[in-house]
Image (cartoon, rainbow, N blue to C red; front, side, top):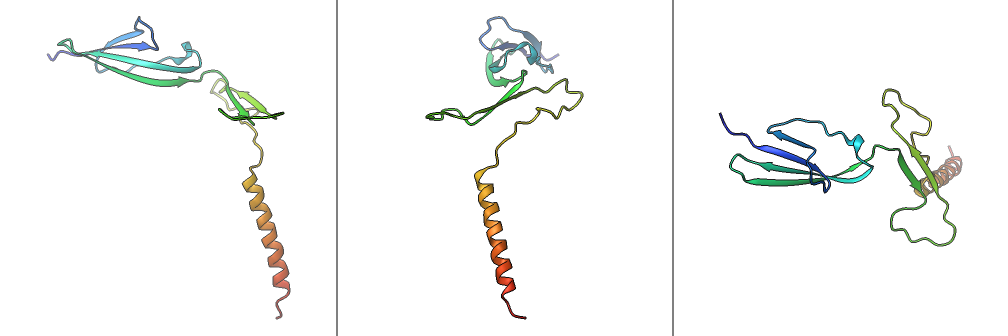
Length: 135
């Protein structure tokens, strides 16, 4: 029988592993026990001869409600009064879809206003020009 490698799994900078398996392995990582934010999964593999390999996978946990802010982005330079809209919503129980509060309302982008005004201007121009053509 061929000797198998072992993998030891760590979360963040913990010194105690949360799991140890023989490879190959399938498992479920329960992120409900982790706080929202950045984390890393560290996998230490050790083969039968004692050689080790390490792989670190950074990931972000968001089990709590999502928070959306409109009017201020990261590293913005602001002055005076800044109007903000803040919305927070969660996934609920994932068995039914909740429409109320599940999306963040947004303002109409300025490029869309320009497009609408340009279309209305073209429509007026077309109407005037098509009425002045003799039959």
